[in-house]
Image 1 (tube, rainbow, N blue to C red):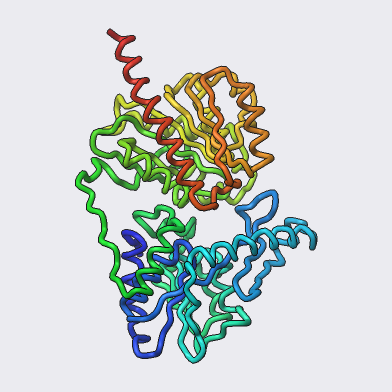
Image 2: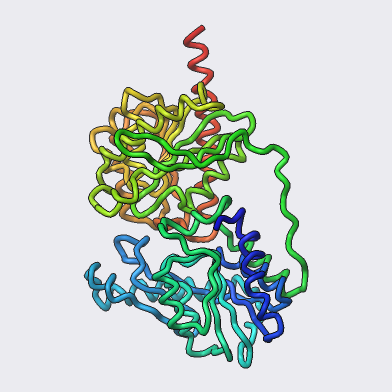
Length: 445
């Protein structure tokens, strides 16, 4: 099962939920990504739309790893296995929960813009998300003690079998359009999976409340020259990727993701779409195979990851519509260290590097050998990583800039912060990559 975008997923999910049309339904979207899907379902069922705000509880030193989630009305779900493995104390969990509940309340007020919550008593409530990876975000609404519906169900575009099993213990019925045998990320089900913003959620809820139809899609007048899933041979393994080359490209940016992520990362895909609109091609690929990811040591093997990046870059320069274009690297988390190590490798020519929330310190001695202009983007509330980036910048001898995004933490989840990071990356690449082409032309004249 593959969807063009969340609108497509919502319309297809609505077809499976059509039997509920006469059951006094209220549709509840999980912000942010679940709301565009839920909007289409509510439109099709002629049902009111509301949100249930949920916040993931991330392990303090590894926020991508959730040990639980909290929802409105005091709902709370904890994964004891993760708590045990991470060695979290009661105070550790309490600090994270206090912070996330404050953000939960802020978002709930922001999304509803003063409107009352849709009453659920005596109705069939359908909780909708754009995909079910762990079930952690959909489980708290199902457990909510203060807002019980007569009957509750959950719907998603795609889901992991184990997560759906968890949801079936909480909901009366679970409907999911696809259950892939191998799961990497929710984004793997979508062709376009850019990040949904707070403003988009507010707009869709307002449209639903006012009875307005769906916003008209923007028609792309210039389809890309290439927009394909690709397979790249790197040594003894074959790596999966997605290559997009827009009309009249000025360069190509290769993405190196961080630990626990993949080419389907919604954050990197959002950044990639921003770059594509600026005339940059993008290649998002998996640095490791599925089998290799099982060994967590591989995720932090910077030499291995950098070597893969070098081999993939060599492959990329031979591709149609790419040959002769300047190459840039965009690295996140540990992927930033791999990008910097690869940029220092004499086998490839890299014209610019951008790190988002990266760990450039893990590049070690390679930092001093990087010659490509490098931008380090860090959230100013990501205190530990910010200090590591300051130290790394001092070790570099190339053109280096450090940009702090106000209010952002490690994952750039705060409203507007990922957009700002993407625009910083766009501006860095669009000013450095074309100049690299001009320099090479002058040198060969």
